[in-house]
Image 1 (tube, rainbow, N blue to C red):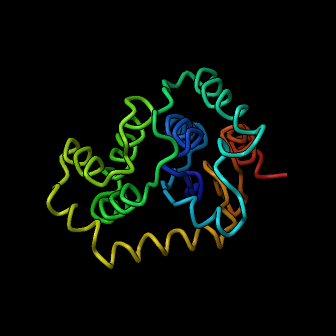
Image 2: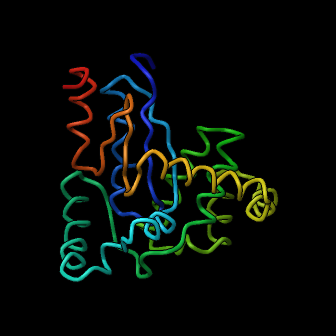
Length: 202
């Protein structure tokens, strides 16, 4: 794929909007002629730094957000069923992604899509490490090696570094895109992102 530097696609595995974006970015990538660099992160540390909380836990915004999750999915033609346990911690999912990514980036993207589908389509608790490992196994990933990697200090540090870097770049929500240094937050900014690339900014 040609046309310029990759677009960084930041997302949280427990984010409905991140899930919706994950279903759209391959087509966006094709339209803009740019690679999408998938970069999962953890919102927990960012919430602590900003004083934010999950949308569903905020008065007034919570009810609206639950309505908008499903409305946004319908708008984009993305299948979504809010899981019974929401949100969940996604440390194991992020560790699994980066461990796989350092071996095979394409397989890591497939794993990310499978984890998202397991959570937002089938309602499985991807906060549980054993569920993450099982899903990875269904993608042909060595489950014993992954199980060990989830507790590996190097993998833990890798994820911490990714989260720290995301925060340093100003990432505060999911999805969050950075194209040529310009940040765009949210699924509703995807059309603007595409226009930014087409026009070379404004």
